[in-house]
Figure 1 (tube, rainbow, N blue to C red):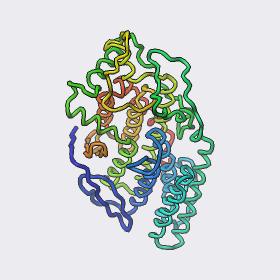
Figure 2 (tube, rainbow, N blue to C red):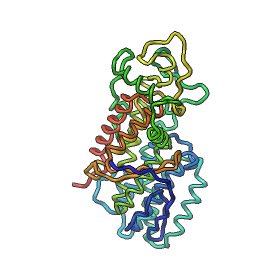
Figure 3 (cartoon, rainbow, N blue to C red):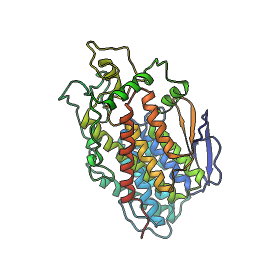
Figure 4 (cartoon, rainbow, N blue to C red):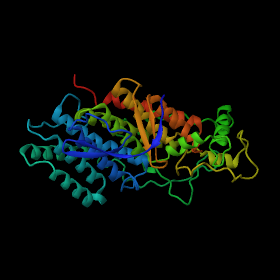
Amino acid sequence: MKRTLIAVGSILLAAGTVAFRVAAQTPPTGVPASLAVVADWSLEAQRAIVPPPAGVGDQFPGEAAVYMGIVHAAMYDAAVAIHGGYRRYAVALPSSADTAPAAAIAAAAHGVLVGLLPAQIADLNTRYAEYLSRIPNSPGKTNGVVLGQQVAAGILATRANDGRAADVQLVQTRPGPAVFEPDPARPAVGLRLSRIRPLALDRPEQFRPTAPNPLGSQAYAADLDEVRRLGRIDSDVRTEEQTNVALFWTDHDVRQWNDGLLRLAAERGLDLLQTARMLALAHVSGGDAMIACFEAKYHYMFWRPAAALQLTDGDGTPRPEPDAAWRPLRPAPNHPEYPAAHTCHTGAIVEALRTFFGTDEVRLSFDSRTTGTTRSFTRLSDIVKEVEDARVYAGFHFRSSDRTGSRLGRDVARFVAARHFRGVG
């Protein structure tokens, strides 16, 4: 694996008459003009869904992944309606020979976003109108808008009453050792994710992993000792590079992944249909991995390393008194530990990309607004390994939880790829 660590820059890539921004090391060449609309509206979705400073939304990474999956499924169905060649995700519509892809993709994405995020309707409408104004008026533009609106309506119909708005409260029914107790100063997050109807899976618990390692096991003791040494805020054994890795991956991972995917599409010179397909496969897989992951989290309710280490010795033996001296590198997310959500998401997207490209040898780079740096990879599997390491170094997760999350994500993505986004025939 080749990795580089450099300062992040924002580069404007011109693609026909429309431009989009991605963070990259050098400007990719040969960007097809047809790619721009998919990238533009992928970034519009990202902006609307991801919280500040990367966006204006309010979805934490788990829910953001699901929302991104829904929007990108709509863009994919619009692209397939125009270009054919692949099976629809949910909405099959005929298109006229004269249909402007830019108008269709924009209308599909906009229609789904206003349905998912009603509080942002005014802003989304303004941005959509400005975007359409840059497309010359023609019958093709009109046909594209109609097609995109029909796709959006169809996608939203499939998501009606899907649990996104469910009011789910955390009830502590079995307090005690190994049981997650949320930080009372912050709201517990991800509760409704386990109740959301999946985008492709048959049910949220379809790939539920076995229970975490029991407290008395050697595997648990090894996990506890590793995170005790490496994840502590003032660790004297964690290297500077390990600290950088940990902090790099504390950025909003949906934002990091989407920017990386758009950069990859530009560098590979993918056309509109292939870009829409790659993004849909990745984001639908990532969204369902988060649903499956949080179903397992709130099923097992396993405690975070900080709680375990404050209440037990390094070998898992209960302490007579809590030890508040051990703290993670950064405050852990306020949801149960097992399995690790970041690795669920990363494992799913990596497997989706491996399916799409047919190889693990894919060059991909990411930026982090936490560290202001970029990390580059030549193999997809190396990304999974680094994210697994990062969650231990940050003091967020046990190693076995990271690996379980990666496997869960992989299994979800394989199921998604077997069901959706496949060629006709």
